[in-house]
Length: 76
Image 1 (cartoon, rainbow, N blue to C red):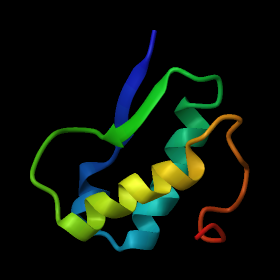
Image 2: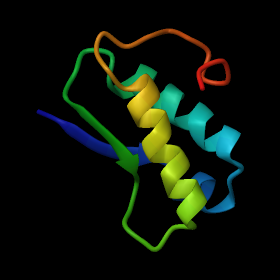
Image 3: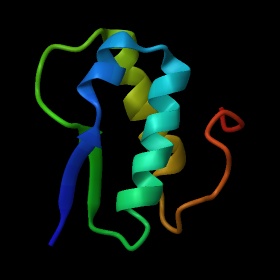
Image 4: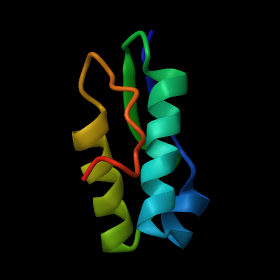
């Protein structure tokens, strides 16, 4: 079984970038620790470009196995 989504659309729409990054880190910790998780928005809709880019950047930085326990605000 694999899981997909999980990042709140409300957080993505409202931002800021730091909140999106923090939520990505939390979802990775909750849902991805054993693999089988595709981190992304909880639904499809048009996103503010800087916000969806922040999600993609956070997944690129934090979503490689083995998952890191680094604080998401410390990784750039």
